[in-house]
Amino acid sequence: MITKNTKLDITITDMTNEGEGIGKVDGFPLFVKDAVIGDRVKVTVTKLKKNYGYAHLDKVIKASPDRVEPNCPVSKRCGGCSLQHLSYEAQLKFKYNKVVNCLKRIGGIGDAESRIKDIIGMNKDGSSPWNYRNKAQFPVGRDKDNNIVTGFYAMRSHDIINYSDCKIQHPSNVEIVEAVKGFMEEYAIPPYDEVSHTGIVRHIVTRIAVSSGEIMVCLVINADSLPYADEVVDTLTRVDGVASICININKDKTNRILGDKTVTIYGNDYIIDSIGGVNYRIQARSFYQVNPVQTEVLYSKALEYADLSGDEVVWDVYCGIGTISLFLAGKAKHVYGVEIVPEAIDDAIANAELNDIKNTTFYVGKAEEVLPREYEEHNVSADVIVVDPPRKGCDVKALETIVKMNPARVVYVSCDPATLARDVKWLGENGYELVEGVAVDMFPHTGHVETVVQLVNIGVKPDYTVRLEVDVDEFYKTVGEDKSQKQR
Image 1: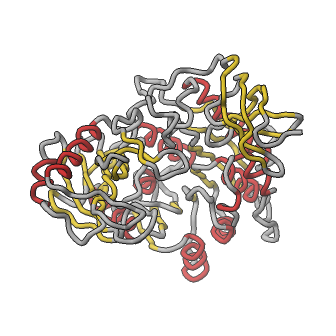
Image 2: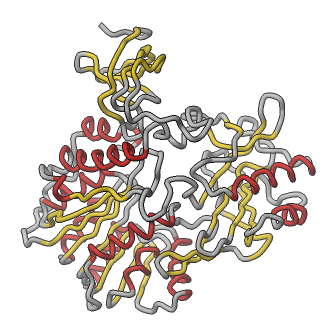
Image 3: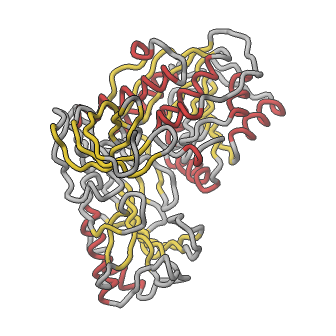
């Protein structure tokens, strides 16, 4: 019988969504951080639930052939890169299998391997799975010796690991972070203390437009203004590429990084990036994919699956700042975008103007409200619908309206294979068959993966009594997350 503090010798046979190893003892799964498939390990059981448990990795008895030495010295403590100890080739295999297994177990697609093509990684055409992120968020605080520290939160905590040279972030961040720390020390600007809710600087947020080289630096502060703002401008503009500096005001007792008010103190309130020949205006609070190289790959696949001839009316649901919408507009008759965040729609409209694209219309609102309204009250049509929902997937009301609009094709872009599989199953039961898909590794060295699939209308009469649900335990066992946080 397994009890807390039991010491075991187990072999890791699977991994969770976040990259924890899974080993089984008489069918009982144990989750082991820093273990990879193929490892034989000694562990100590630390926590037990009814159907699974957690164990600490004490020793690797025999290393998996896929185990590698992490590139980053703080990777084991940091919560950012959970797969650095797994070879990149094995990471790609793990992510591909995760997508296929979700589509099989949740989506009911038995031949998922034949429909999902090989994963597209960052190990081809000269690209690298390192230093790919164009956005970084560095919390600021003090260590036990009262020194200012900046880096990343340790896994499942708010303890700051004092390290700025993140191996998946853009190299310019090191110079920016050190410049801000130097400014704070010189002018005695206190960092934020989340326990006492005192201090000023909470986060350093950077955004980098890789195509233009423009950099935005945003200091998130617990105050109405930043002391010595002119001096921080003078400090940061010495960093090559800094084109925009802004202050974001967040005085709330919250884990949310950005507040609602942003004030620009140098340059424009945006920087310009380009993907696939389309220019995008990026502000401090804009949603924009963090990996520009793989974003072009992902959106090109979405455009391919949309299969546009130039005569189609297209709806881009959950459109953000119009990144996919503007990609599609060059091949469509008209593109309609829907997004709940007003600032994102402002950006989408500005981005259309920036690119002199005139065949787009954007709506602010929830997809499950805008789509039914436009369909039922204004009789809008759609030849192709593209969805790129948040991690929780599509709202069932939005899916019902999509089916009622009867497009020839639905292109589904997903950041979560489990909710993708759930929604694909529902669409399959209501007339849309998954024909082809591909996984794209947007986030090397983490457990996350993007997937884009094409579903075609096969003319089956919809049955709206079919409920959008899956076996919750099976679902969260697949994604390896706390089900209490994501039930809907």
